[in-house]
Image (cartoon, rainbow, N blue to C red; front, side, top):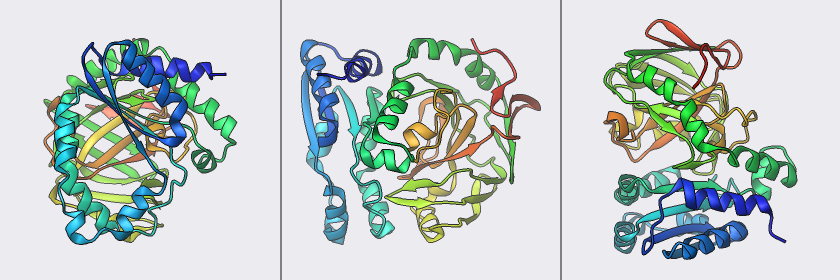
Length: 358
């Protein structure tokens, strides 16, 4: 018997998250563990008269590649993947990890190299602006979240099965405030950070790129970040868990970085390229159905009452200019004494907005 929640989620992904028209070529990148959802998505694409291209990944494939690929192979540009990216009218990405730590012992330099090589293809997908990503609940993810699989499934579907159009309407007033704003200050435990947002546009996120969703974001003016921030939760990058991250900024650039766990990896990622030490994104989590940190950035950055700052690439919507092969979100919880201050006015305190959302 089909899980009705899977059916409903497939409907959201194919009817709301991306635009699918008759004759479109839609790429679906998935994993074996997400078979129930992948097949529902395939069915919906076909019913719309479009053409699904299913790419199914094997558990352990990323590990095998990064362990055995030599420098020549890591630097080889995948021409076929570029051609496909140019041809597709839309794409849906579904992760379903069986081991969230499989890349923990891989040289981070290999991962950084490959990111730079494939950045051109990632940019093609981003420019088409018709894509969405989701993480299907698996046993590995449930373990990371300290939940049973059943509990984690309930958590995931509750966060995703929402009225996303209503969420978009709630974000409208917040967007206007930040569109008209000039300077943001973030205050919290071991944190006092300011940056300019002058002439930058705030973007609403309500289920059209991420699932689950529920955030607004913008790109700070690149050379304006000043101060320091201590992040609340560990972050996962390339299969490694980096914890206790603290960053210090001057003229927009990270001038000092420390971590209590995997600090060497953090420092290597900051050397990915010139743009890796600058903030490409400032986001405000607005999904108050997500209350628990589960070590999955797709969920964690949406936690209502948190903010996240991404080192590296800025999404070009809204005027962001920072270029980098890196885009690394890190989360600050403001629910216990934190504040977001816009042009000297407190707009959020202790994770709650000081005005009514519309």
